[in-house]
Each structure stands twice: as structure tokens, then as C-alpha cells.
Image (tube, rainbow, N blue to C red; front, side, top):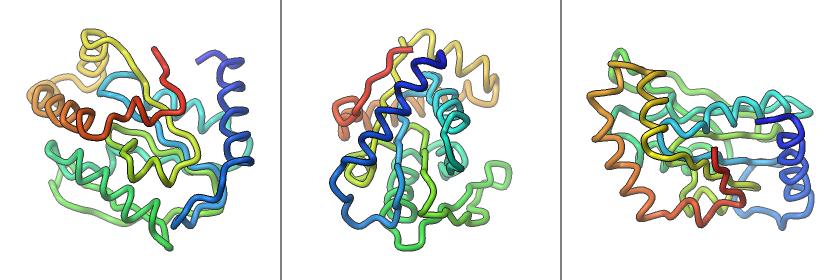
Length: 185
């Protein structure tokens, strides 16, 4: 994202944070930004750029570190809500993809801005506790090309299985409709 566009996005988020009504049942005192989109859409790049441009220390959480395996989209979405956004003591648990099991917990400072990126972050429950929500859109063929170029043979056997979970989540939660910003990449 070009710097002027990134600066404009940061301004929109800051205005929303400063003027929004208090969010119920969340410990976070600063912005909570959710960046969602289908695999390969560019959400990780956007969230990383946003975190780097943030004017103060920010916590960036990637759902790729949380999904409990290739069937874990819905579980990770619930985990974000229950353990991070709606918790008095925000934290998340890393999934060890090599060992195939849950790993260590990471605590999150609720006084820092929080950016959560990953497919499944923008559910209705999570959006209710967020300050600003973004849905990243990219055409299917380009998404697949980018995702497989990034992750190669490790991801290819799971592409269809993951895509089915994405489509089910989209049908149920309608994240693009929940988004404050739909970003075409």
C-alpha cells in the first residue's frame, strides 16, 4: 500500500478509535483492528504494513499461528473471541504445526493497539469488539497463484479443503458486509 493511502487508513482508524462508543466486554483501551480475507488476498502484507506505520507500539497477531491444523478456521475464530478479545486477560495459544498440537500461550497488553489478521478474524462476535474492520478482496486465480507461490507444496494438497472452510465462514458470517473498509488488491 502506498504511504499516502496507509496514512489515510491510519487516520480513519484513529478517528474511529477516538469517537467510537465504548466496546462492551473488552479489556482493550486502544484500537482493535481486524484484517480478514481469503487465502492469498494480501491481508498479512497489509497488516504488517499497518503495524509498521502505527505511531506507537502495536501487537500484531497472525491467525496462521493459531489455527489448530487444516480444519481449524472456525476454532481459531472462536479462540480470538474467547481468549483474546472478550477476555479480561487477553492471550492466545500458538499451534505447533510440526508437532500437530497446541503450544505455548502468549499474553497481550490490552493497553496497546491490536491488529489481528487472518481468515476468520472478522466474525460477527469479533467485529462487535473491534474498533475497525477490513476485508481484503482479490480475484480467485491471483489469490491461488500468490498463496501457492508463497507456501508451495506444503499448502497445495490442502487448498480445496481450506477454501471450503473459507466459503462456509463467508456464507455464515458475511465478513465483507461487516467490514468498515473493503480493500480491493
